Length: 274
Image (cartoon, rainbow, N blue to C red; front, side, top):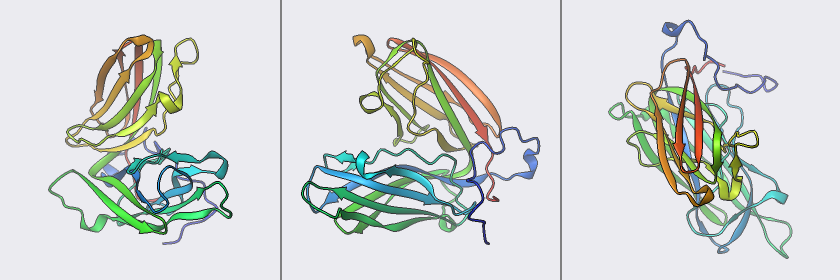
């Protein structure tokens, strides 16, 4: 099947208002949990830039997971440290394959041109998914050039797309927020104030999230947000969860430490057609 290279990217929330639920079957999907630098032939720390992209069978277009230019390197200080992922911006559909392409370079003092750090391709094969577990966490290691990179992902059966946003309605926030699937240990870091900045309600209150989309099984799981807040020296820890739906939106509110948080989740069916 051929797709136009000039067509706009497929957005999230395509079927949030769908009135024809029976026409759409639930799709299998995969969440890219992390991309970790497992080893380095040049030691640590290293300053990494370049891209990690995903492609799925909806349109095979580039969907950036990580994208940094040479003047905005991410310092990797230790073995197994993860790249700061900022995508995907929509749910990935796993009909046959999801391809993950890695193209990373390192910026070094006194070395020119910059050396290739990692370059290669790995894939998630949707044709061999077990139907016994609705969520399976796995990893695949890409060995190339000067490093080994591990892509960790969770395959999800019968999934819907969750697009979320968060706002601080009262108080202050300095801490971390993770999102995950109930009963699954591995989660995704979507905010870390050490790198992403503190938030106060005196401003817009909008919490800048690194990633705002995740897919989740409709049949047996919940979407869980875990908040740690240490603003003002008041330590707080709280979770808030949502039961997925085929379409529509849910909102919730919770207090944690010195802040009160509002969370909105929009649910959408996914379809493998562009």
